[in-house]
Image (cartoon, rainbow, N blue to C red; front, side, top):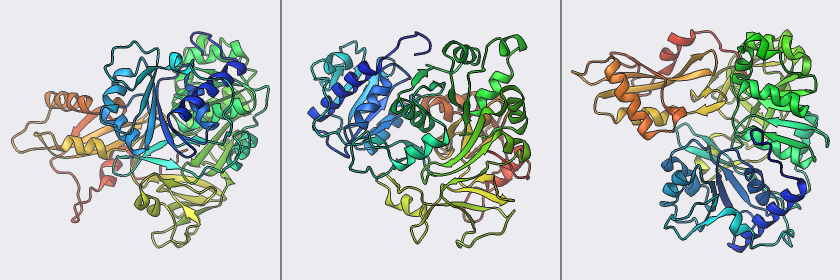
Length: 500
């Protein structure tokens, strides 16, 4: 752990993961069953995942900033029967499980007692009762993480788990290991929340290779650079906002530390301004690699630093799966013509408990999948031009605006509302609301303060708008569909936003 220096050896990690695997088995969980993890980055997080990896279970890591109702929805929708949380998140977790009848056990790291809920146990004390030996019949488990759908409700991404021992790698992990040049003596620095899919995969693979993982509790640009020098970090993964914040440091802080140990720095998840890419290449040289992965369908493109400079708006060439740009009738589009991005399915997936959503994301013949991104191909390179669902990516976090819109419309002073992403130099995008007020209501700073407070009372913080503008009437089509393009063009212009 970066802030405390607390270390967990592989021997300790093995013992801890085995104990938790026995706990889960003792509570009746069997292969393909589910449990959930709701914690900040801490020294018990990774073993909480590892127990599922060796028990044939699905584990769902939940965004640690969500509110109790949001947590409850994911816990219940994922069919989780055990929830692992921390003292820091205890109050939210207990409020959530009050409406989750499937939950049989709540394990709290540093549980203070006095909850009044018989399901709640202290994590360490409860695990101490169980053996450190492996389960008799270990099977491979894996993460079932959630992303938000077009309605604002999160969707669980479930992939088939092969019936195999946990030490046998899946084709995906083998692919990523080669792509990211992982090896046994690597030292990986993880600056991001462990509930995100990219840190999940990266740290998981580091452990599977026998490397050293340094986990930051939260990102700080100076501390990140210091840790690279202190631990002689070789591999890392970031989002563009982190690049931007490091570049904005005073020169003496930015150049104070020796970064020469770095071999691979991967980024994805959010738009990266071209000027930031060039500055990072000038600073860090040819170690930086960027990726666009259609997460659910696992189609990947990759771009190294030389491709960045030659094609600064691209996300690179296909590395896994085959990409197609199709129109609404599933016809192939010519180069430089935007359309929906479809990948030939690299690995089977479904949206948990949502066959309708799964069908929408799958081609009629079942050979391709899409997450609704729009883009075009030019000279063999992929350019992204839009998000079909107007998803907002702010600081590497995916935010879907429907939930915020639905909440704002319930306010008695709001007649209509739209929520969009607008440019933010640091975060890539930020959340903005455009509101049509009720007759007789005066828009202004007082109303803005009232609406933002209303949002903060009901939403997790990343979904709360940073600002609110007012319109006499929002642009809706005759069908009632909100025409967000007209709103977005005010802030972005009507040119293609070439993003990664």
